[in-house]
Length: 538
Image (tube, rainbow, N blue to C red):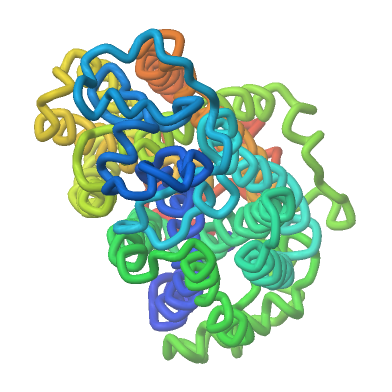
């Protein structure tokens, strides 16, 4: 008897599983809110130098605001006021002739900046003047956050396989809540950066543990549906984020609002079950029997577990040494695990780098920032339907490869769309976002099925770490547009193509029983390919 047989007897997709998935969705609401928060809190609104220092108490004071700007701020090549320079002294002759100002002496802003607050009441840029020479510091806030996510993936992946899914998930709740609210009340940029780093650290645990806990409780037949439907919360909240940001347009309140759902998640944590797979793999058969009995009771199958003793469960998952502690070193100790780690690492880097390369560039398409973000969220719904169809029809490997290649093609084609054609540019960008989301949805499910139970969180933690490396460098890649306007898009395209090629060399996992041990991966034992076969096995 295998674990899949036990799960089939207690109903592998009943009310118990639906309740578990719903309880996992609550904390996942915060993921897109925080991961895409930089699109709104780090916006740099229109601004110009504060020209109050040029007030000489005479003529200047009697000028209108428009006239003061004319005599104080030089114009850029496109005719807009310069954002970082001002005249050393008022140039009153420009009121009569403003055609020639190339020889006039200018200086950097001497008394700070004046910002347009019509769209955003407050952002990081307006709070701490992260403009001009400090513009890159503002962009780096996303990188700092995702470096925290990157480290959190490695730490929480290990802790989850070492101490269990449930208790580690609670630690991630507490960490994210504390540092999320601390970042909202930061009194300087350094404190904010540190708090955001640890917010990302905590969120990483929520991201990787909830999806694994959901999938480990469902049967083979429903894994695809659960993998896709669990990721729907991301799409819904991605589309909801611009609505939230529109009404909560102060960065402090928006950051706090994005963290608030975790209070409900902590209350609901008490009803979350531990993974029975993990418990059995670690020799905790009494606890596994308790949760399987609870599952059977909720699903109306309690008669089956009444006949099964805890000792029987120890034979369900064969482990060479129940006292063995697994770590990240086990990813590279054996040949096929090394190959799996290399390929999945490349795939995750490519998926995350290209997804956020598109997602963090919502201001680069010439359309209202709220509308662009909403479109990016809404386009994920057809992406889910598309990937649900392809996962069942052509399998995981071809779905992963195809969506990555199409993402790269969309980014590449967008380089040749004229800048003044904002609608067409946004359309191609949205298509790229759709395929990028489809590849992200696939990679979570695919990776969970590739790694064995004893190493599943370690594997997913490592992959998420590689993904967050990709995310961390994507804002820095976008800075390369200063070297050549199309250089970021070229890099993102090549990364997507490389990841798609790597995905092609992974094994197919559609309708295959989850591997339980490293030996299952190394010896490539033929596992069940249907629920009917599964029930007929001894």
